[in-house]
Structures are given as structure tokens and as C-alpha cells.
Image (cartoon, rainbow, N blue to C red; front, side, top):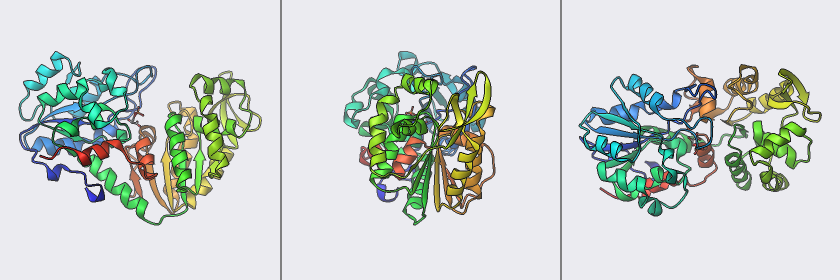
Length: 405
Ligand code: 3PG
């Protein structure tokens, strides 16, 4: 695949084989009911799976969902039912990952069978970041690689993690990128090499550590003309600027360990990075919603306010490239979706190219018809931004170095 030298399905003899396919079907989950709120990531893998099934292969599907301790850390039974629906054939859910039950099921599979293993992060070693060679010795890789012939990585959205299920298998069995991985990498590389300026990055969502890393990268390489922040990332930069967020917002930042990132955020600001923070917010006060200026905050921040929407939208409309990753507010609650919706609208109405990434933003786009020549909807969030910032993605590197057939 292009300059990255990654084998694709075209480079492998995947005919009547047993193939382990790493998907990223990590989806937004309703925190109260534990049910999936959006299945876009699930649908995005269907072309890869259909192509492999059409060639008589048996498929063992592997994915994560959430992280241990989080509300969205759930099993994959509901995911497997949706995969069955979109594939038009049974996807058997196996409530196990590397135990004897899973291994027996895989051993007994025949061409055309599909099984979905349970959440790979139930195996604690999956959350360890290490080298491909170290991960090749993990329980996960040693056990599963003995019962399959080959590995296909279609999980672009997790390609920035150096975890066993992403980097370990290419060391030991013939591996390739799936069609989604191929499509993402080709589209993003093309867009980013073109001269599309000014470049505006809209960053929100909950994964503040990741977002800060992205901001550090963008500012070090001077890749962004403006970085428009929302959500907890905006709050972090406001604290770094010495602004007063009010007691409750500070307590939330403290609870999520975000205050420890303030020195890094200060460093980014000192380097002259073009960071914008909201001038107003939608906040929740005693069960009600109101709008407050960023300089006089009393309520709990839940979304950007209307003036910020206007300011951010005007930057976006004039951009040559807008990259949107992560929502501006708590979009699971209808009352706090407006900020994110208006910025997406501004991006689609603007004159520039638009890349939208991350599970939550994709769920906001839903089935809206889009002009494909102007918009790339990426399944990646963190992976997308790190790729655009020129970072090496471990899962892609592992595929490029992997064993030759
Ligand atoms: C994502 O949603 O960004 C990917 O699925 C990666 O998830 P993670 O940040 O929990 O590794």
C-alpha cells in the first residue's frame, strides 16, 4: 500500500484460510442502558469481511470496546448481532477470548463460518503498550496464532496503540491490512499532502491525554493554523491560561486526573501554538441549562456557547482543510449537541476539504448524504490525528515489517 509498503488483501493468498481479523467496532454506548448508540464503525468493516468470506475463508473477529473501569467497557454480543445483520449470515458470539472454549470453537470452524470473540480488553495484557516482538510472546498472540492461518488488521481507529492484538500477530503469521485500513490510509495521505490551507483542527471529546499529545505534535511541526478546542481539552487550556473555571468544573478536571496535564498545556501555549478556547459555554445549574461567559462561570460546563459557535464557525468556513475530532459537549444529552452540530454544519458548508473522525462525531453525521469529493469520514479519532501529525502508527509499522509468506 503506497509508500508505507504495507501488504493489502491483494498481496496475500487468502483463499480457504482461517483468518483472524482485528476490527475496531468500539462504539458509543448509552451509559444508562449499556446499549450501542451508533453502528457506523461496525458497518465500515463489512466490505473487508464480505471479500474474505467470498473467497471461502473462515473468520475469527477480534475487537475492543471501551476500557476497563469505563461505562462503555461492555461485551460484544450486541455488536456480533449487528455484524450478522449487515453480513447477512450468522456471526456466532463466543463469550471468551483465549480460553479453551474459544480455542476449541476456532479449531472446529469451517470455510464460511464467522465467530466474534469477546472484548479483547478482557485479557489484561491487551492494555500494555510494548514492542511487536514483546507482544508476539503474549498469551493472546501465542494462543490465537496457533489456531488461525493469517491475520488481517482492519482497525485503523486503533492503529496508534502498540497493543498485542494490533502489533503482535504480524511478527508470527502472514498478515495484511484490510480494505478499511487501506482506504483510510490512502485517503488521508492524499489529502494531507495536498496544499490545503489554512488548516483548522477542531478538537474535543473525552480523551484529553490523547488530544494533548496531538496538540503537542501539531504545534511542534507547525501543522495547524488554528486549533479550536472544546470539552475537557478546552478546560485544560483555560486552566493553563490562568482562567477561573469555578469549583465544580475544577473538581471534575481533578477527578479525571486532567490537572496534572496543566504544565504540558502551559508549555504548548508558551510555544505560541494557535490554540483557541471558548468565550462562552452552555452550563448546567441546578438541573437547568444556561449560557455563561468563560470569564464568569458558575455552572458545570456541558457544551460551547452561541458566541463561540459563531467564532469557530467563521474560522472553519474560511479553512482550506478542517479536521474535526471529538465533540464539543456531552452529545449523549440532546440539550448539549448544538455546539458540535453547528461546527459540523459550518464545515460542510465551508469551501475547504473536511475530515471528520472519532466514533462520536461519526455518530452525529449518521446517514447524512455527503459530498465524497469534499469530505472524508474517518473511523479514526486519535489514530487519525496522529497520522495527520506525521506520527508513526505502530499497527501500520508492524504490518509493514511483518513476516513474509
Ligand atoms: C478510539 O475510539 O479512538 C479507538 O477505538 C481506540 O480506543 P482507545 O482510545 O480506548 O484505545
